[in-house]
Image (cartoon, rainbow, N blue to C red; front, side, top):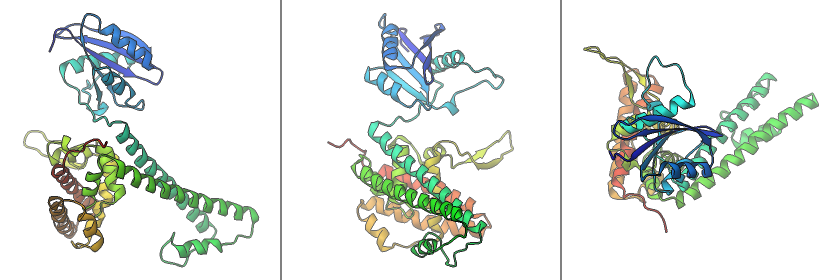
Length: 371
């Protein structure tokens, strides 16, 4: 640790930033006050702190304000960490939270090396992540619209005789539904139009994701992940957009813990107590992995569709994908035979699937920027 180093804690808000500085080698920790949350104010702060030739090390909590400050400071040549809020050490009895206290705590802990930094995507990777999250939110709105339409029909005794809703036959049936009251017919038509509009938006976002993923530096990783059973283009794109480079995890258990699919534990002395999964980390990837895990309830089989996708990757990746399918299909049946609930089985399968995803990430070359 250089004696001219300064560790700067930033408590970032929409309009202001609380700033505190910790001097190196056990020096004082002082609060500098608040500045405006603008690039000009941040540039001025960095120049003021730089006086005397000090090396600057910034940190702030990940939050709704994004990564703009990180990108600005790193572009200026300074070290800046975006910190995971859930992993910041806190005193159990501390019930006072202010911008001043938070910035002082960040500066002090940053100097001590007690903070855990999160992965910061570049502009293109963040754009792909925004796209996959927008599709996820639009799909949620579509499900809500469908539920409202079906509830409206059920309330008025209108039931579809077919086996599956939202097929062509179901839509043809909807076209023939009539209500006695003109107002109710208008309400019904608004519900139907909403479902159709949201369906078009979901389809449009799917096409955008396909195009953006193909142009991404992670496209070889996306193709590699698609060799796994249950991992579609959307699932693979979500994984790489949320996680980034899989090589940054040194082991498969580390990736599993990051995704929150490992069991929680509260052990003391000779007593060991394990509970449900921790559900920490990235919930978007955890959701798509659990959805993909349902595929492994079937017997292991190389379908023509899956084989065509696997042939686009290397032989090593194909071997990992087949090993994953044979193991996880067998594991699914074994856990189900033990009387486990299906949701518990899928969660266990999702955890092991994360391990095979990590293995594929290690088998592929490191992503490089496209020309």
